[in-house]
Amino acid sequence: MGQELSSFVDEDTPTRTLKERSIEAVASYVREGRAKKIVVMASPTSLFPISEYSDSYLTNPAVVLVDWCRDYCFVVNLCADIAYFRSNPAPFYALAHELYPGRYKPTISHYFLRLISDKGLLLKLFTQNIDCLERAAGVPSDKIVEAHGSFTTQRCIECRTPYPDDLMREAIKEREVPHCSESQCNGLVKPDIVFFGEALPENFHRNKTVPSEADLVIVMGTSLTVQPFASLPEFCNEEVPRVLLNREHVGSLGCRTDDVLVLDECDAGVRKLASALGWLDQLEALARITDSDELTPTQKSDKPKDDAFDDEIARITNEVQKSLNIAEDHCDNTRSFLETDKKD
Image (cartoon, rainbow, N blue to C red; front, side, top):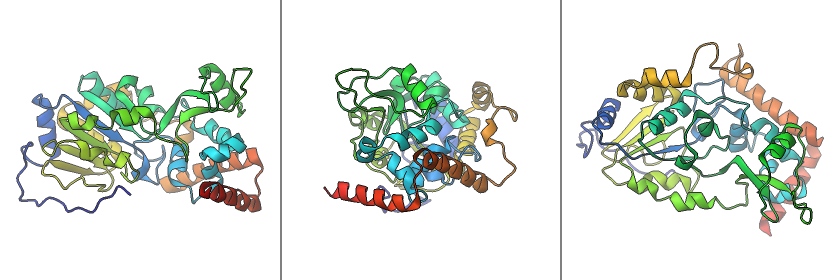
């Protein structure tokens, strides 16, 4: 869903806005002051298998686990289902211990978004990430639309009363289930992230037409498979350049005359664009990236990237299962519970 069938523009078709379909032409377009309202769409999902072990946009393998590994571990799928959360919130809070902001660092791609904002060129960033790494990199909150919500705020799922940040941090640190601070309620508290069975945030719907105001669109690290996020690049005007920084072609990118595709690891594509813009030194200074501090201790491994990623997935999965003490046969029962609930 979201991957519309469409044909690439012919190489001989002239551009309408850029001098040519190249990263250098995009850089010239920006340097000439013609890009003053940049809209970015970002997400981890097209880079699987990824983690902080790879040169990717996302640095939190637990988020990838939620987004991609629903078949890999059914227990994890339960964590983000609102119906199951109401009956048993423990598995979510076991996973939240791994997901919670502060455990992983932003990458150079996150800092590139910060740099665009610092230069006064960022109109809006749409992200499917829930780990707040864009905020950690310094992107202003009013520039961010978190399509699937985030851990930034939390509230009671019954009376909707906000819950204090410090109490939530402590609960997640201790893998405890917090309850509403209103004595007459005592409902379950959940971070403001979108669970299966919940609507997207009002902030997303309020801003979904913002791409129509853009004079440059950058799509990075997303598979564009989930609607309505997947339709965002279609809202920009036909003559507006769209740049794809991604490992593979997605959506309709490449089908307009001023689409530029940089098919590479997301961070590598960002470096190419930053270099063409003359921003690379600024970017790396902003990110303070060195061989010694770019990776967190959990990232350092002599194993191949995919093997290290699988180990991290297994570790997180085991933590969730251990907190529940779920046996394999119980997974079948919970699967039946969810399927029955969704039919109702």
